Length: 114
Length: 113
Image (tube, rainbow over all chains, first blue to last red):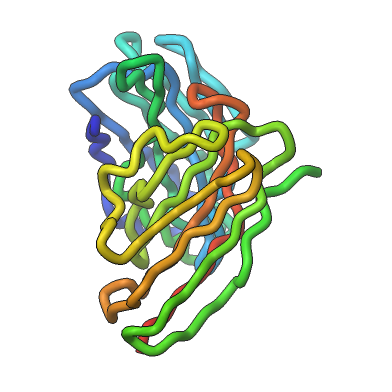
C-alpha cells in the first residue's frame, strides 16, 4: 500500500482566515482526490486532479497536483464556519496485474470559529 | 442523482453476535470498496471488488470478516463474531473502474457493546 501523509492533522482558525492542507507521498499517483466529510456521514468528493501541475478551483477552494504527481495541496480562502469538517486526500495508484487501488491520508480536521 | 446506498445507517450489537451490512453501488460501477473508518481518521480499505471478483482483501480479518458480491452488483459485509474493537464506521464506495474517482455511501455506524 502506498502511503499518503496529510498535514496538519488538526487546524482551528478564525472565520475569514486562509489555510492550506498538504498531502505528500514518495510514490506517484495516477490521480488524486479530495473529499470532505461531516460527522456521521460518508466522504463527499470535492475534486479529482489527474495531470501533474494541474490547478482546479471550486469557489474559495483551490486544489493543486504536484508536477511529479506525488503531492497535492488544498487552499481555502476566507474560511467560513460551513467549511468545518474532515478533509481527506486519496490517491489512485497502479498496484500491478492490471489493477488500481485507492488509498487515503489520515485526514485534516478543520474547525472554523465564527 | 445516482447514489451509493448503504443499510443499516446505525447498528448496535452485542459482542460475539453476527452483524451484516449491505451496499448497493451506483448503477454501472464495476469497482466496489468496503472501508472501515475510526472516528476522526482516514478510511482503511477492507476489501475491493472488480465485478464479482475480489481484487484485494489483504487487510480483511478473515477469521471473522467476510464479503461477497455474488452477481457483481450489490455487496454484503459480514462480521461473526463481533468484537468490541470492531466499533467503527463502515463505508462502501463504488467507481466506474478502479482508476476513476470513487463515490461513497452514507456509511453504517457500528457500535459493539
